[in-house]
Length: 345
Image (tube, rainbow, N blue to C red; front, side):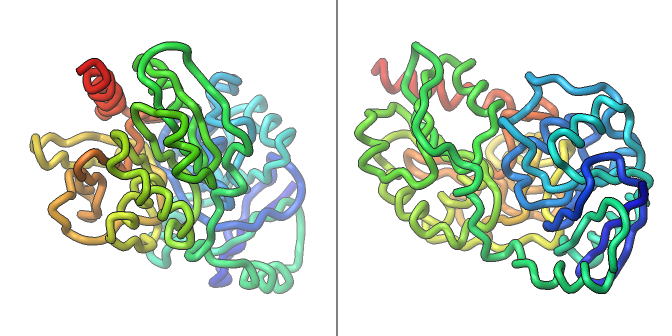
């Protein structure tokens, strides 16, 4: 079955449908990760997005339940040069995800780099481009969209049995982040995105982790207010969206990147050590400014990749690296170890 991608500027990229039938609307973005396709599409940070993979073949090593970053696929559609196996495409079909192969991904990525991430529709089958384009242009832009309510847990739950107690506020947390925290020797309580500061502090955490998540951080005024209340009450670590919320709570501002940072090969300078970390990233917004609290910067575009305040720190990239290189793995472990030492003091 044929299919095509239609961008809000009218550009059309034709391909072949290998997933579910229908039309998927969302923001067209691309990732340069060469592996980890299952982790990517199940990452809640990809909610409301049509994901183009730059690698020439996707799906060639199958599917495994242990690789999923959440209970379902959050990407709205998958765009590929070539699908690597039936297990992958059948899984996407059963998940109800529109998937297209034979897309000229090189031209598409060039187009998105020139024009920025944009509203789009992935169509399986035939449809009127005029009618679909009108629908695409009626969709809300990602800027200004608060999406965490659609991906967060609705009730608290616990993981791990021993070690310092870490409260995780779930804005769309990846399972690999929770796994790294528990694996570092902590026990975890995961709270919904709209939890109040009193409830978090009432659990008597030794540390607080603000998770990753989708959408624009700026509309999340309630969550920013909670973060502001929590700073200084326990050691705090923000990751991705959590990093942006900490920046807003500290009085910094955020802005939308032209086409985002998505991939597993992004170089980041750790300013204090002059060491370069090759990192996994997935975000369309960033913290602005050259504040003295900046600890890490992107070597692609100089944007802020880390902040450090008294009793609070944050990372724009993903130290759990699910998927990605392991350069930043020690950062979660060292944070948990710091909590353990403070608890024992």
